[in-house]
Image (cartoon, rainbow, N blue to C red; front, side):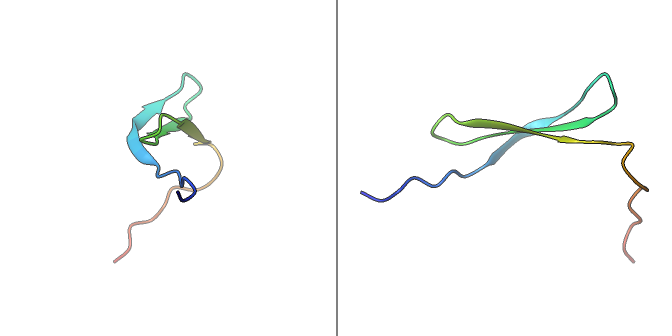
Length: 49
């Protein structure tokens, strides 16, 4: 058998009380992850034209 490779499937986004964006992901094997993005860490992104 081969090695297992985690595939991150998006489970949604949420916002913490501190205003941070939180990304929730999971793998089909049951592993879960959260990634936190600091909203105060920079300038807003500009839309591409």
